[in-house]
Length: 224
Image: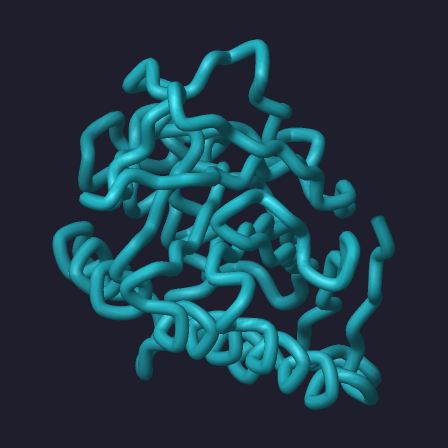
């Protein structure tokens, strides 16, 4: 596996490479790490333990982030990683030398759109991974309401699978899943024709290197 760090000076080159790989590698796995308190620390303290309150915690956590690292790996439907195991680590923010968050998130969305209906975006953190992407894709930032956020997810990423949610549904054996807190994102392989995932058809697990932030699974917030 080769990790490629992406900054302002090489973001356009790497985003173009990702677009070129869309046809052969339609599955994108994303892990986001940003500074500031994760949503699970805000829920129940600043915000109530309700669906709307949980979304408000996610929204507050993501909107406070001024810089982030986004890990991205591409896989074929047979579980092969792009370019022999290339993994991108985007360093995002407004500071000098950092890659542009909006351009990178739009690039990930462009990959998802180019690969439909065969492609999928795979996250592992319940909602914060998707929320970070949506924040920089949708004009005006994250929607204020949970139902609007879910609609935005559906528009931007029609095939969105969160590994935490799938694990809750007993669709992925826990022993074969790498923890999100270590920056690991399993990628599903060999999906059924209707788009659902079946463990009998096999899974491939690959890791996105850990970033500096702390992430915990948000069991109480369902994205898919």
